[in-house]
Amino acid sequence: MSFGQRLRKKRIEMGLSQEELATRLKYSSRSSINKIELGTQDMPQSKIAECAKILNVSPNYFFEQEDTLPNFLAYGGSANANTNTKHPTTDFTYAMYEEEKNLTEEDKDELKRMAKILSNKNKGIL
Image (cartoon, rainbow, N blue to C red; front, side, top):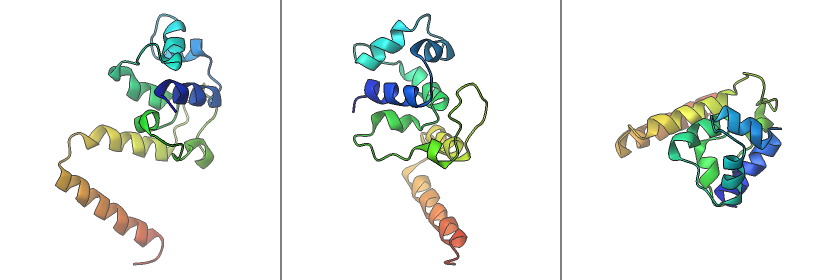
């Protein structure tokens, strides 16, 4: 699935029109969203993170090669695009995406190790 196809799919799942998404992303008209969905125009990198936040997905969602990503709405995210409800998993994923660029590979490995320890602790394994 292409970037535009993923954008369209998630926008529809969230109940947003092209015009509503365009407004929230500060585009002057819905035609920009239409062109992005059709693949005739790229979304500027500066808008991808904001778009992901609006659609309750990780920015990586748009670039995955297979449809194996979790649907954050299934874990209690709000399907009503007009609410300010935030889902913790989405916020966490977004925060990790934003901070990841400032981490060394060693830092990332340490973070993964700590996440595994906490996960095991919460499962009662430790």
